[in-house]
Each structure stands twice: as C-alpha cells, then as structure tokens.
Length: 96
Image (tube, rainbow, N blue to C red):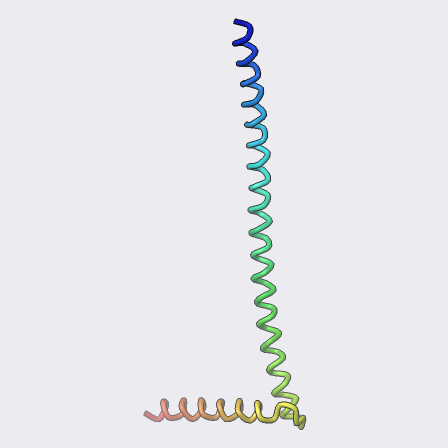
C-alpha cells in the first residue's frame, strides 16, 4: 500500500509542478500579448509619421522647384497641370 501512496504523492507533485508551469506560461503569454499590442501601435504610429514625412518631402520638392530649382521641374509641371485639370473639371461640374 505504501508503494501506491508514494506513486500518488509523486503524481500529485508532478501535477502541481505542471500547474505551476502552466500559470507561469499563461503569465508570459499575457505579457507577450501586451507587448505585441504596444508594438503594433508603435508600428502604426511610425507608419503614419512616414506617410506624413513623404507628403512633406513631396511638398518641399515642389516648393523648391517653384523657387527656381531645376532638379524637379518636370514633376512640378506635371503636378501643376494635374491641379489645373482638376480645377477645370470642378468648374465644369459647377457650370452644369
């Protein structure tokens, strides 16, 4: 009978260790989920900043060309022509 009791005690100890490990892993998992959420938010913020900087860079290129730089003259002319077409379209829509 004592052999069975020893086996049961050993089994209980192993089960307790497993539950302890399970709780530890659940805590680690929860921490990783929080970290993942924070990282996703950071990535989204950085993506928005990148897009804003790209827009600002494009605007600065156009402004630089308008001030007399020859570097992006063609792109600026195309952008101005595009804006003129949009304005003409809007005027045509308002005339109808």
